[in-house]
Image (tube, rainbow, N blue to C red; front, side, top):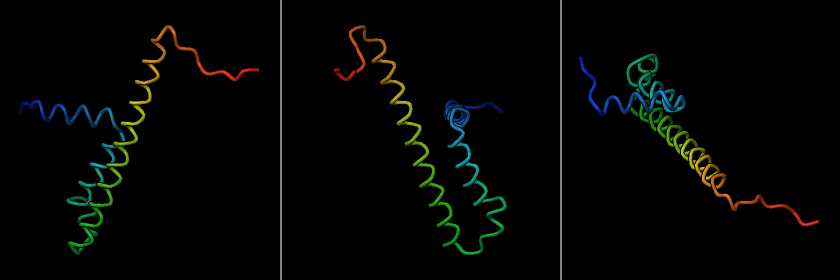
Length: 89
């Protein structure tokens, strides 16, 4: 079985983001694993999945912000004219 481009993208994203991987595994558990056995009502399953989706969004946005911060630091460090702010004495 050959993996297509979209599947490769998903696998690479999961490998590069342990937080995303944990969230996806948690949703899979709710819909088909231990969580599936424990949840009897559709409303409960929905609430559980929505909670994980919120956590996933927070995780992805935190990772995005960290990447943006690192990129900004790298851009600034490339600037030869950049001098860190120092207090005058």
